[in-house]
Length: 233
Ligand SMILES: [Ca+2]
Ligand SMILES: [Ca+2]
Ligand SMILES: [Ca+2]
Ligand SMILES: [Ca+2]
Image (cartoon, rainbow, N blue to C red; front, side):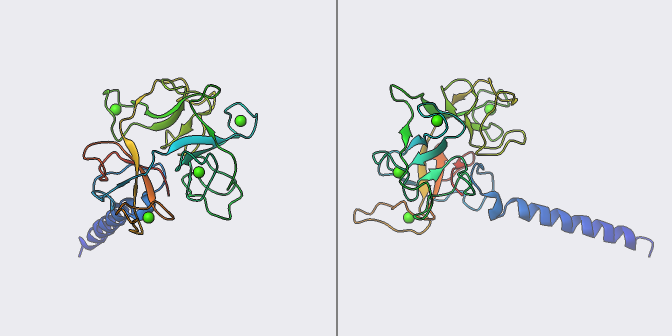
C-alpha cells in the first residue's frame, strides 16, 4: 500500500511525458520557419521543382526606393510577373496575415508591384545561415535569414527561423543580438510538396493552393530530409 502514491506519481509523469512527446511531433510544429527533424510526418515525402526558379522580392512601402521594415517581403513564385499574385508566399506578415501565408485572391496585397532584389538599384538578398554552433556546417541549430547584403546580418534582414525568442518572419533591429553576425551560404533550392497531387499535361506537379514550399537543403534533393526548412504554413 505504501508504494501506491509513488506508483501514481510515476504513472502521471509517464503520461505527461507521452503527451509532451506526441505534441512535439504533431502537425502544429510544422509551421513556417520550422526545420524538419527526425520522425516528422513530412520526412521522406517527395518534393517537386518549380517551373521557373521563384525569386525573393518586396512590395516597396515605407520609404520608396529603400528596402526598409515597412516593406512586405515575398517569394514571388513566378518571377516574371513582378506583382503579388495568388499563392505567392509572404515571408513577413501583412496586417493580420502571418509570415508564411499564401496570398489569396481576396487579399489586399494582391496585384501590388514587387521589386526584385539584386538589380542596379536594389540590394542583393540570399537565404543564408548563422553558424550558431561554429562547426562550419549547416545543421539544425543554425538559424536562417533572408540576408540582404549577404555576408553579415543587417537591420531589416528577415528571420526565416526563430532565433533566441525572435520569431520567424520578424525583422532584425539595430539592438538585436544577431545584428552584425556573419552568415554563410545555405546550400539548396526551393521546391514544393504537391499537397493536392495535381499534375499538368506534361506530368509535372502544379504549384497551387495548399502546397507547401520548402528550402531543400541537402542530398537527396526533391525529398524532404532533416534540416530542410518549411517556408509556408
Ligand atoms: Ca521601402
Ligand atoms: Ca507573383
Ligand atoms: Ca553549424
Ligand atoms: Ca498542387
